[in-house]
Length: 109
Image: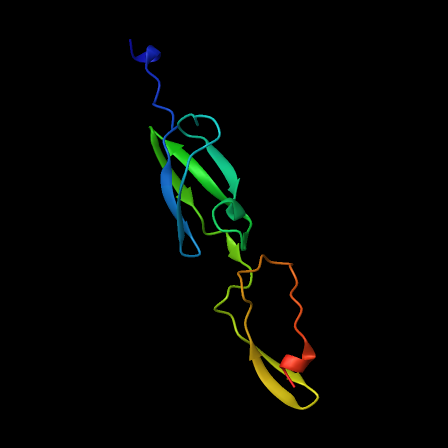
């Protein structure tokens, strides 16, 4: 009987990419077909904030990472001026949004 048929849930991992980091992710518990689950972006890449969405459709798990936002990555460059001296600065490690880094003025001027 067709009333006894139910779509497959999603429990297997799917590979996602956030900020160049690829990781297999799976829902904490199986998702029913047609449902979704929000997951923290920093669980894949520590410097990213926000959440991504896992979506289950007929046993196929997909992820939408478009709402993950980067903090300051090591590739970022800031121009600094201290007492007339100019310098470029980049974080030595990826930084989450809202975090702080301190730099000695002597290294700039």
